[in-house]
Every structure is written in structure tokens, then in C-alpha cells.
Image 1 (cartoon, rainbow, N blue to C red):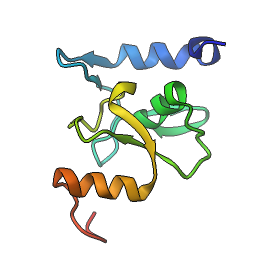
Image 2: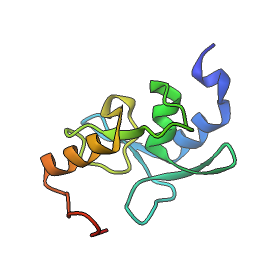
Image 3: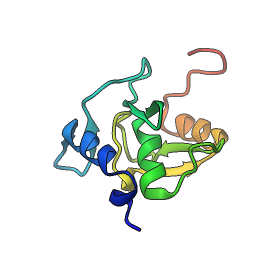
Length: 109
């Protein structure tokens, strides 16, 4: 069964609030969390757009402790292009933040 048949509404809602850049990023222009990550109402709660994309395209289980992470080549927190995302752990996320120079240290939100 295709992804669009499982969640037909979410695809349209995402597309309606997306700007595609020339370099391949899909930037969500709807709601955002304080962190700058896109956020959307999905399955009864507010979920990050990258997590919804990872669920729809990469098979991420929304009940999992795993995270939807941006590859270090994607500088946009509001990008939801599945080619810019991967499923990983919180440790992977911390390592990525250190790699790209945005890690602020523990307890420094």
C-alpha cells in the first residue's frame, strides 16, 4: 500500500506549507517549535515535521525512542525531504551536532 493511501491528508497539508529550494530541500513554512523545527498536527498530537516524514518515508515507528535526524549535509531544521533525513539515536544526534558545530553542551538549551 502506498504511503499516500495510508495518510492522504498529511501529504497535502505538508505540500501546502512547503517551499522547495533549488538545492533539494523541502522547507516547511507552517508552525515551528521554539527550536526552529517544523511542527504539524498528526494522529492526535503535534509532531515534528521531520519525524512525520521519517515515519511516512523511512518507516520510523512514532512510538519508538529513535529520532528523525537531519544528515549533517542539511542545514535546515525545517527541512522534511526524506533524502535529508535518517533514523538514529539521541547519541547519533549529539554526535551530529558536535560534528557541525552546533552542540551547546549539556543543560544549555
